[in-house]
Each structure stands twice: as structure tokens, then as C-alpha cells.
Length: 146
Image (cartoon, rainbow, N blue to C red; front, side, top):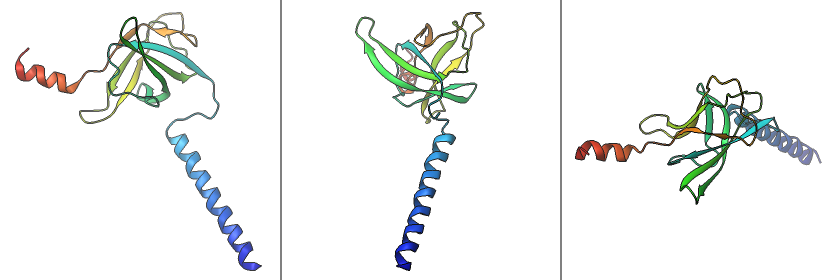
């Protein structure tokens, strides 16, 4: 009987430790547990390098994530849906671009706030966008001189 009680206590400690690691990992990644978020949309000529779950950053700080990617059949652009912290009051003339962490690093969505008085509401579309730049295309242009 003493062995099964000890095993139960050890099992509970292991489960509590695992739950603590999951909670810590979520907090360190900037994930919000049921927090208020604003859903925004943006169209890019190229969304190369980002996927659902990609970070959305403002001033280098993770403020949200990409929640959807689809092709707009009318314009042939990548329609991106992303969320940002609901406490942020982003001006309507803000810029959104796909940036890279370095030559070999991953990509993320970067927001640069504008200066307009009006703010983006949930469901709005960000008009000022810049898609990803392909390193391979740049190297080929440099090599061929075109």
C-alpha cells in the first residue's frame, strides 16, 4: 500500500512539472491565454517564408501571430489574417511587411505604426504592405546583372 501511495505522489509531481513547463513555454513565446485580440488582414504579393503561427512583431516584440493564409483568386495575392494584442491601438496608416531574422533566419510579420488619428478595428485590412524578398532571386539578379 505504501508503494502505490508513493507512486501516486511521484506521478502527481511529474504531471505538475510537465504542466509548469507547458505554461512557461507558452508565456515565453508570448502566447496569450484567452486575452483580447484584434483580427487584421493584409494582402501580400508574396507571403514566402510565413505560415500559420508565424510571429507578428512590433518594435521587435511579439504582439500576435498569423492565423490564416489563402490565395485571393481575383488579385492572385496572398491574403493573410493575423491577430495582435487587443490593447494596441494601431493607426490606419500602419505598414505591415514580411521581414527576415537574418540571411539564414526565419521570417516574421513586422508592423510599423503610422501617425493617423484613426485606429484599425478588428476585421480591418492593412493597406500598406510589403511582401517577402527572395534571397535566391536577389542572388540570381546580381549574378546575371539583370
